[in-house]
Image (cartoon, helix red, strand yellow):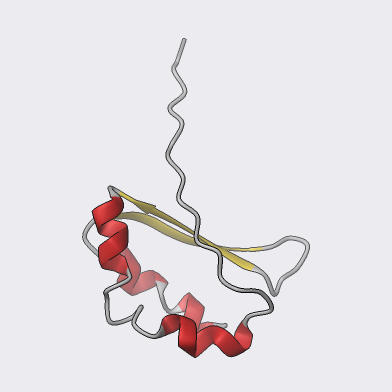
Length: 81
């Protein structure tokens, strides 16, 4: 699990990164979600080319109960009206 938590510092320094926040499940402390916010898709694409991300999925495969799921979302802007 430590390898996953070491991703925060280098990821936050990447161009285009707004936030990188790990969350542990309230129901299952072995389940972790990474909430990463990027300026644009180019930032996300470049993230997976960084040295700290190279071979990551191979390195953590033994830790996974299920395959990694990557999902992209867009922000919903709520008006003040």
